Length: 321
Image (cartoon, rainbow, N blue to C red; front, side):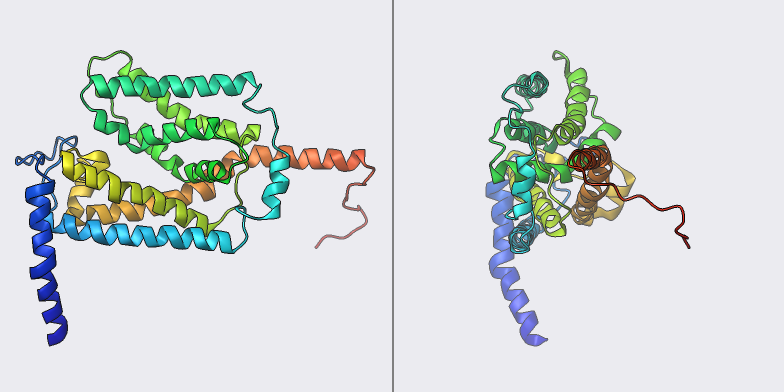
């Protein structure tokens, strides 16, 4: 015990404390000194510089390991990323999707229009840093996946990762930010953007623009780790640099529940994100895909009938127990 305490005290005195002092004096120079927990747009020292330093290292190491392990297991198991089944499914995708389908072009135009309005609102509303909010990034991700080559594994992975993030859109619609800064169609575009984020993935699934990977826990871990790294590394780091509370990385939402857990609120958020990623992919997407599965089943039966393969029917004289 004496040796471990000595090592901990040495690390505390020689590494942790100097690093925390550097973060406070050299990195977070834009951090407001006044703590206003009701203003969740500005950062405060709700968490100490020491805790920010320790959590920045620990969370990023943890999520990077999960990112690598999830991707490794997903590939190793021979699932949809490399499997022949993915190639077979891909052959069923309509080859002229996006190239000639008017509806696809219209959907893409709506996505681009909403994102252009969002950029206008953030830049001229002097809140351009908030273009990094997850919903705006997810909108850009949808645009990139639609214009990207459908044969690319990276494009397929991006779309299937997005399917784990549907919960974020539902959460935003349930607790809307209706702040009106006086610019053109701010409130209207908020609702329009988030309904697009919810409905366009369903449209892409039903039109066969992308193959939906089979359920995979390792891919869920990979997608969760990518989403969490975006928060723990980019949003948390930029939040400290600029003093902006990007997606609550500096100050928790103004609710009794989040303030009740105090300095552990980010741990609660990361755990909740993992659960919601599983709910999004294992429940929401599966429910959304029921109609598509019925359609594919009917198509397969129709092909069997055309080929003269008889359907299996239950005989009336068979006793069912």
